[in-house]
Image 1 (cartoon, rainbow, N blue to C red):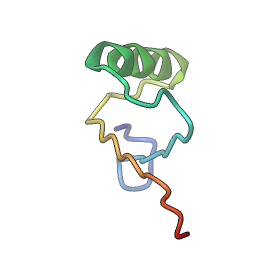
Image 2: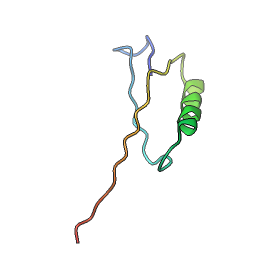
Image 3: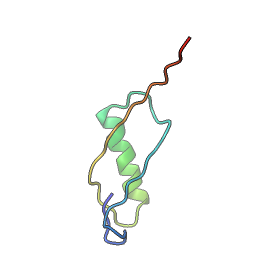
Image 4: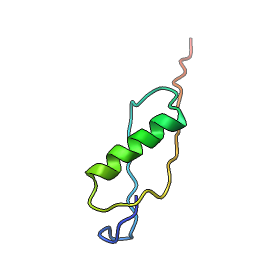
Length: 57
């Protein structure tokens, strides 16, 4: 998110435990909600990182 109020003009936030395989539409809706709750932020980009836990038997 971008906003002149942030020290570097950019704020990165990590969200855990969201939908397992989000669609573009779901991500867009999530971003819309974040923007509604923000103080004039702009959306600079989204990165989805998926991590799978593997166990050793």
